[in-house]
Length: 495
Image (cartoon, rainbow, N blue to C red):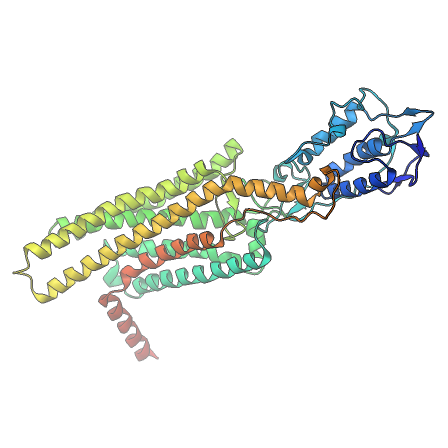
């Protein structure tokens, strides 16, 4: 036994005057012990761990020693700490003398440290925030959850992505709005099938863009992606929270699927019209209008309800807030759910719609080649223009869908790496690594390590923009120019 040089431990006075350094193997003097205790203070950033680890560390580093007898810490105290401080074992084990199997931990041993009132006012370190909600707790860090801001991106990167999102969403909104207005001012001429299907496609895209732009209303972004306790939304809808996340999810997801359904039916209608005589298709397609609407509005509704119900029934993550895009969407943390409810519908729409487009493309080329002698210049030019538009659209569609799949594959493959990087970063911020080293010669610098590529995140958004622009481009015809010309003439005459 030796007299205590500093009769305090983590700012609390110790009720005895002698201690020993024999229980630890990382220090040989009380001065070194103080340095080790200072390093362990990094665990203040793990509040629930900090509340229970202080008595254990003091009982091991500064045990009571009297008459050659040392008061040992108990097995129960050690196991309690292990339960709340799982993150300490991240990357490496506890120091050997702090493992519960060590001889210094005696079962049923009463230790005075458990009666001392320590300061338990720890706080969660960024990127974590304090939350009493157990479902929001970050793995191995009880009492803390991931905040709303993307933990692996810098502030400049987050600001850059937000600017990119508003630019992309605004362009997509303007193109879809132009297409919708074009149909509305010339509704009498354009309400027949299949032309009106282009209107429904762009109406769905416009409403989807409203869901994207809603985050830029002051205060709306935090309301959409964040819970009241400041953690990122996950597993929505959840009890005790408002429905802003669910509303945005429905706007974006439901109308995305509806646009895909209308696109498939548009390609079918074009192919159907081409196969029949000029007087027949309009009547036959109008007769099928009820079926078109039934498919276009009911299929997305069923899938939207299924996604939310699946999350509720299985307690799995299906709808999450996305801190990068600022919306709520089908979670990317679960590749199976994302593939089944996003990639599969996109794939089906791509192949079915592409099949009908390629059929029409082939028929137009055949018509042009086989009837070149009887077609006048006006008809030949119109066929040539249609062939060119369909060809460019198919190529654009292939590129956009390919980009979507590449971005998803990149995200699915990188997700485990990003998760591990975040865990290591959180552990580093808690100074765990430094506390486990025997001789920390220099301060430990914390870096998130592997992070998402901004280029890939932006490419994903560009694919979204490209789809809106490509589907809106079908209104760029001479008839559209004539419609707007008549509208402005009427407007000018009335004013």
